[in-house]
Length: 186
Image 1: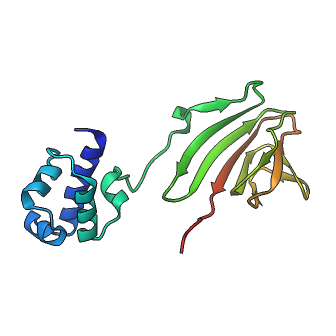
Image 2: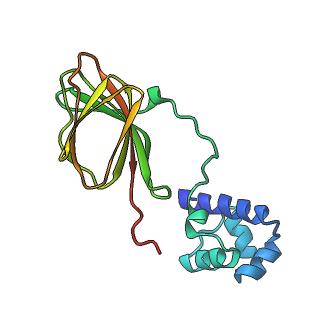
Image 3: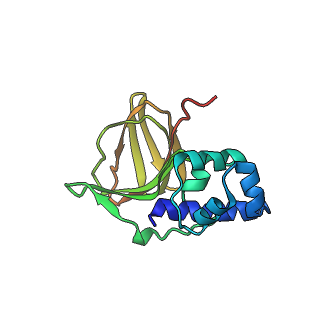
């Protein structure tokens, strides 16, 4: 059984039980036979797209609710165990705390810039929210230069050119939250 079939098996059973439905009731709502639903829940069958469509339509859940693994309500992230991307010259490093998530349309990462160094120029297609944790950020934008100290934050609108600089004598550490615009939503 592949991972997708496992996800469907676990999610179908969890969703059915959360709705207090028997296999008979599920079969009646979806038009899929009780024996097929049982095989799917036990991971003995890999359902076709048409069967999955009948199930999600019948029990009124999204396709994603059925095929993706359920995430925990609470997740603790240990920053020390997260991979770090370091620039070639070693002037800055980035650690992705919360990678891009298509459901919530954001990402959050920690950036550290060494004294006297800067990150390359960026044009962002997202709104950025930056919280300085340590040091002083010198943010250069089309509209001017801004100094942002520890325990302060700054917002940059999508589409703005900007550059992160550390003109101080100690490392600059900041958390950057990127919020992606919703497109094609009615």
